[in-house]
Length: 529
Ligand SMILES: Cc1cc2nc3c(=O)[nH]c(=O)nc-3n(C[C@H](O)[C@H](O)[C@H](O)COP(=O)(O)OP(=O)(O)OC[C@H]3O[C@@H](n4cnc5c(N)ncnc54)[C@H](O)[C@@H]3O)c2cc1C
Image (cartoon, rainbow, N blue to C red; front, side, top):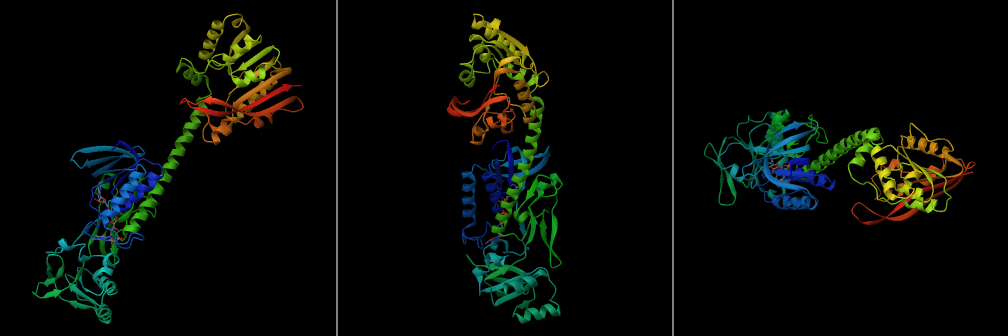
């Protein structure tokens, strides 16, 4: 177990495992904590699960656990004893299999703890529950079709059960065990269907080594039977939600309370934000396949909720980045964080474009640690290197001095934010901006000012990361909407004033992991007419 998950699923039955597989397949970190007491454990087979008819319950869950593990989901045996709010998420306390206790953090909670079948207290009954003491005709009716079926009538719902089970057998007998005699209308319905009613109460359930043989009435009479139908009281296992003030509500059937469930909307969302329920804890009538489906739906809804939260957080972070990333403090921090940020080599597109130009006055925008300015100065240019970071400028000046010759004398270092302090109009034979990425609005304004700074006959050289690299699945750590194509940059230049070349150039580079990759530069080289 880790200490923090996107989702902790409490309960590893059909509902929980199905929800967990859905979440793991959605690339969420998910842990299922399970006390390993699924409701149908006493039964030999699962019926009514399309495609898996007759599978032993344990086998179905083992297969599901393997599927979960295959997608990276985790499973732990234990009991969740409480859950408490922790910001937007929860702290969950787990009693582990070895008796220890563990605290986990989770962003969302899926509770699939099932229900407890409370059985009528009749000696010998509990031992045979799930074998030939049965509660559900859809689970077991086919297996006892045409056999002698007794219905233990502990409440008025027994009349409904008797009529229902009559579909599976002609030999249905109602054993009155605390319920009044049927009224005239009900008695007629039972008579019409050939259902016998006997007085009780039932004193004991009788069986030989392997099978139910019948029931003994308090009168001493023995009623031979092959199956006994009971109405269990189906109580939601929801104690762990007490700490979140999430309480089960009664479930009524035919005017009788037959159990309880944790209230939720059709997707499983409860009134406590971040808590979903699925399976029998939310729906006493859900069979295995229905529970699995509810788990799947809840899992998908939880993922959607997390996607919404992730997007909200990303927007906040993005706004914060837009607000701070392009400001001086952020650049100073970035340069201070490492002794060297850049390679120290001049940018390849600058070398390709400027090598053939006659030296004059050059403006190197975002001059960084100075490699481009130094390369230009070495070729005889009078360079103004401008940057928003004083740390970068100091480093660049030091590199220029170290380069020797007249290089340092040919460079003026200028501390400026070009958004507030545009360069002098027509002041340069070359203006170069390499990999300057800003939000679109400020970027277009700065590039327009750079274009104005080019003298007649001079060159504007703008090079950036092409968005193609990002779209193709790689690319630098620049937001896609701050990248640009050469055509986008060129579209802002007036062809009447500029001779424009706008090209996408591939070149080899090395990614942060040291791997050789191909990147694409957006290159605009424009000569002012
Ligand atoms: C005898 C019997 C036979 C049945 N036969 C069939 C059948 O043939 N076909 C069919 O479709 N349906 C059948 N059912 C119904 C079936 O059992 C349920 O539909 C199904 O089990 C519901 O799945 P679930 O995931 O909601 O709950 P469960 O399968 O009950 O799983 C809940 C899990 O949560 C765990 N848990 C509970 N509390 C905690 C906690 N605090 N911390 C950690 N874990 C916890 C439990 O130990 C359990 O493992 C049968 C039911 C019974 C009683």
